[in-house]
Length: 319
Image: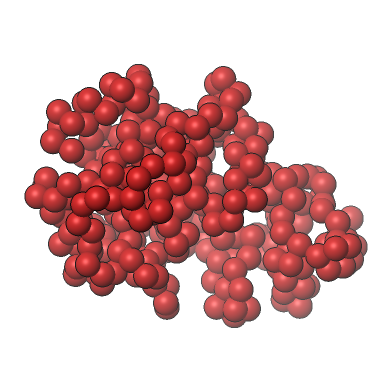
C-alpha cells in the first residue's frame, strides 16, 4: 500500500475512515520515523489519525515500527519505566517525587520525557532544580541505572525520530500519535521491567491494557493527572495491572480517597522542589493516592510479594 492509498483509507472523517491493519500501520510509521514521508502528506496523516483515533492494530503496528529505533537492553530486576511528557498545568508535578521515592525504596527507575513545554512545568525542569540532569546517551543511561538504580533520559536522546514527531505539536497546534506512543515505550526488551503509563480518556484504558497483553509486557495503567502517570491526589483512579506471565488484567489498586495531607501549594518549580524534598526526607507525609500507587509498583516490580506486605514494609520505612 502506498502513502496516498493510506491517506485515502484513514482520511475519510470520523464516521467513514478505516483503521489500518497491523502490517500497513507498521509500514506507515516506519516511513514516518525514517523521514520518508513528505511534509504535506505527513500533515494529512497526523490530522486524519487525530480525528479518527488509533485502532488497536494501528497502535500495535506503530509500536512495532518504533521498536527498531529504540535500544533493547537486557532486563534488570525490580525495574520500573516511567514516562513524563506533559508536566504540570494547574497543580504541582508529582512525577519526580514518585520516581525518586521508588528509587529510594529499592526499585530501579528508568524515567524518560521531554526537556520543556511552553505551557507547563516539566519533570526535567524540577529535576534540574534538584541537581539531577539527564543522561547524554544510551550507554550513560544504562550504566547509571545499573550503578545507581536511577536514570533520566530526554526523548531527543532516547529516540530522536520520535522526538521529532512530538515537536510537530508546536507546528500543527495538536498532539499526534507520538504522544500516545511515547508513554508506552521502554528501552528494555518487551518482557523486562514494568511500564507505568496513564490514559487521559476512559475509552483508551481497554485499548492500552490490550496493547500490553499483545506485546507481552508488564504494565500498570491508570487515569493519570494532567497527562502525567501519577494518580491525581484530589481525584485518584484505580490502577490496572497487566501481567504478561499470567496473561491477565487485574485491578491492583482500587479507586481511593483524595489526599488528606498537605500538597505543594502551587506548581512553581521552587515550591515543588521544596515539597518534594520534604516528603523524601519524611518531613511531610506521602499523599495517600501516591502511597497506594507506590505499593502497587512495589508488588508489580517484584520488590514485594503482596500488597499487604508492601503496605506494612512501607510503614516500617517511615512512609
